[in-house]
Length: 195
Ligand code: ZN
Ligand code: FE
Ligand code: FE
Image 1 (tube, rainbow, N blue to C red):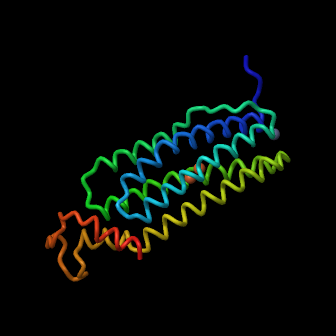
Image 2: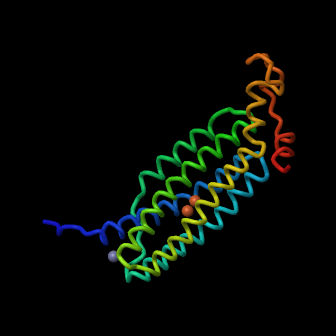
Image 3: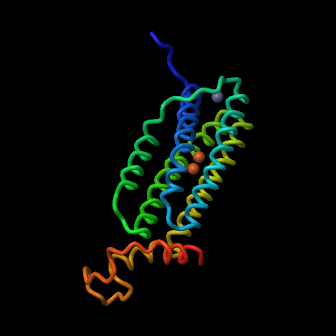
């Protein structure tokens, strides 16, 4: 019979889960970047990929600080979020709508990570694992910043561009009036994204 687990065991388990989640994200982020039409959105995914690689190294430092072997354990949660992102990329959306949906997918991942790191920081602090808590807090801050960057991009033109594709530039225009609704205007969206 297995021994009764402690919070420390749950903490190590959660670290392994998160380590695996970050590794899955290093494979998913390049796909999100490639699917993005807005250069700013592409940059956001690419720079978060670099950050994610640093986060993996930081988790390795956390394992070392606890005298634990570096080990991952399949994270079903992020796998599901990544799968949903993949389904979005298979849709035939206009560019700005695709970008809005990629942001939605990205933010689901960031919020999942924020929940994971929030718990990890709290548990590390509660158990007096100060070095681990400090490292994990650094990553939590990066995840929050990545989430805020996506919000800024969505609200800084991408959602509006997508809304105009849906409803036309004039708000008074009836839905389905169809002025170029089906048109792919990668260039104009790209310019909009740069503003
Ligand atoms: Zn502990
Ligand atoms: Fe991350
Ligand atoms: Fe992240």
